[in-house]
Image (cartoon, rainbow, N blue to C red; front, top):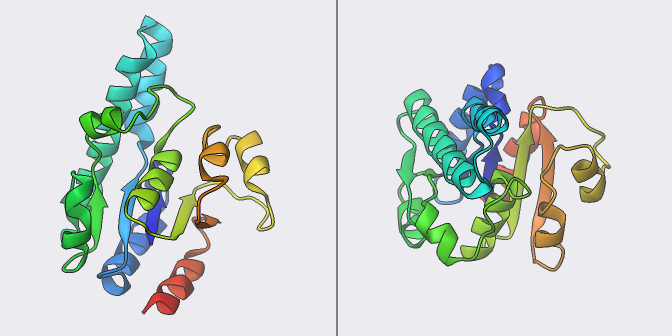
Length: 192
């Protein structure tokens, strides 16, 4: 499965619990996609201040995801950072992988460079590239369990391009709160 851990989880102690659970139960089955967190927030802020273009902001936001990947590995050293999509599957057999995206690969795949696409859609894109059918998005916000993707997008919980991107993809998607770690544990046990 692809497990997208929102960067806003930095403000919650459960971040370590999610990383530890992934490490303990996810070998051979989990790729973690980090959000950009405070690093991406800083990009948004400086773009508003200095009015630089979306392409520059996009590259900086990818760097924010790379910083979060390093931070996640710093918190849980057994996790392995992999940047090339083609190398993830081989590394998954030995480790739980954290994806650290490369702008060049995203450009080659035609990923638009704007704020409509964030790490949410990138996590879905990665799942499709790896033929992984289950995506779990972990958010710091609380939302109704029966919320549709459209509602989550309207409330700004997931990015605006996510719903369109996943509409015709064979993906099972769970969007859970940081307080619902038991859902991840259950999903991991089903995949064992």
